[in-house]
Image (cartoon, rainbow, N blue to C red; front, top):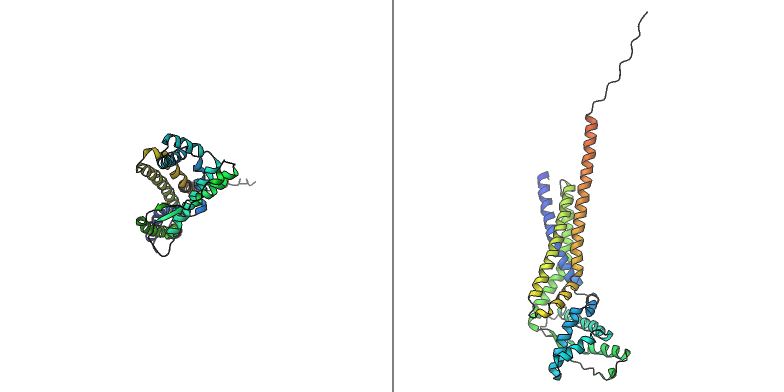
Length: 299
């Protein structure tokens, strides 16, 4: 294979690898980071103490209870906001997130493909809530009724498209990162100048990390802009930031790794060229001739 052909093939493979880096990271995050229930609950747990989330819960739950009971919305909001500072609320928060995530993932992994409404049982939240309130010696906590009420999470019309998208991400989350690594390794291996190939791969990886960070920032802005109620944007922003923490860390890691490798490769090549230049200069310098021996004068 000629040198020019090797250079062209290496450039194409490295370009494909760098292009797949942000998409592979995004697919892997969606396929493995968001689908694990335990990881999801752990990620969402700190939001129970977030002021914006607590205010959104107090407004939503307080208004709902006020409509059902006919009581003052302001009174119910204050009561719910006070409840959000208790340990029982944090227990209910974790239980609700776990039950909702489990129900959604069960529907997405449903092999029969039935398009039915995705619901969760409120008893999965009220049961640990009642237990925690009983442990905390809240008056009349033992009398809280446990009713199996179904709450809708996803309509059946959206389930088919969500299931297809989930299966695509499940495949892409494994193959895209693997393809990026294989393309990068092959592009470096076939390159005529491997040092330049490594530098190009590193810079492309850094560029992919920067693109991923920019995409996350734009996605956050668009997500919050689409909310119908501006009052809930701080809470939605907190949830978005919590869910994308791993992805943001990955983007900065790719950026830092790429720049570090590119800098190290450039410094190594520069030092090597400097040593080579010194050797050339040393070999080109003529060796001084030895001084002539003194002649003896014959008597």
